[in-house]
Length: 115
Image 1 (cartoon, rainbow, N blue to C red):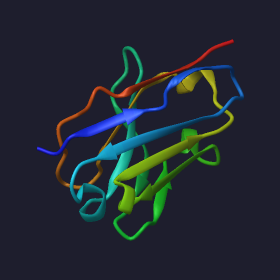
Image 2 (cartoon, rainbow, N blue to C red; image 1 turned 30 degrees about the vertical axis):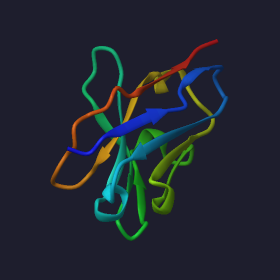
Image 3 (tube, rainbow, N blue to C red; image 1 turned 180 degrees about the horizontal axis):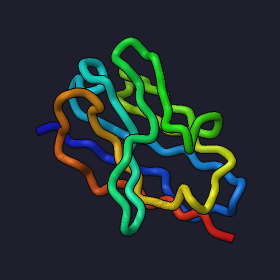
Image 4 (cartoon, helix red, strand yellow; image 1 turned 135 degrees about the horizontal axis):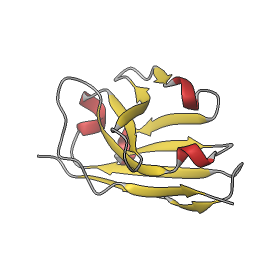
């Protein structure tokens, strides 16, 4: 069981930006492919951004060109830079392994995009 903690969410206007952070204990960011997930009310949790152990990235179609995932393993921190935010991005955002194994889900961080 490795603790994961998300932060950086908040209320932002459409078109605005936020940077989310994920801190992890131990070597979790060095040994796992990682992802940012989100869950909106009434919807299933979905993977929106992926980063491999080697650093390659991928994104779901709805966020391509707007979101950027990155990792600083030496600081035990992963980031999600979100630009050009839309109301449809409103959700609770979580970080976790994107490989075969999931760690215990943290509390997530709320992102609300509203005018």
